[in-house]
Image 1 (cartoon, rainbow, N blue to C red):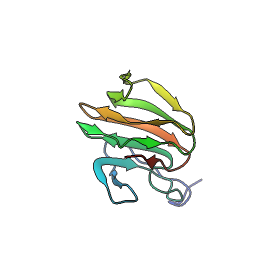
Image 2: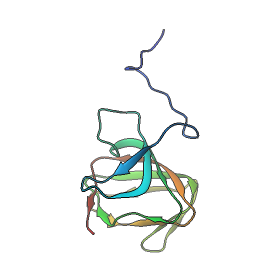
Image 3: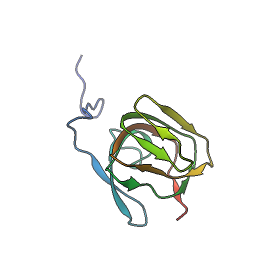
Image 4: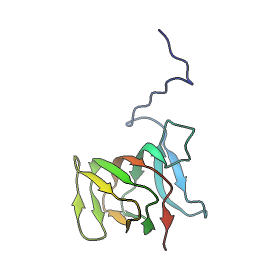
Length: 119
């Protein structure tokens, strides 16, 4: 059996082209996303998310649950929790937070809906 490009997409997180993420209000922080499902808006559903060294996310509220797995690097949550490769995190719908990465990080993410920036 063979699959068409519409039926199956394959990308390697180590050499695939990531798409820069730009918030709906035009703010870009240097982060980027690898997302194969083109039926979802960029950054929704399942994707791989890359944050450059020194990046801090905007403080935001989750519209739907978010789950992520740290694949590489370190992520520091605004309450001081340090997340490292292998750490899996769940944020419930309505949770508000922001994150910082001193050396850059790579995450596998599933998020139900777009986040709402609060700053």
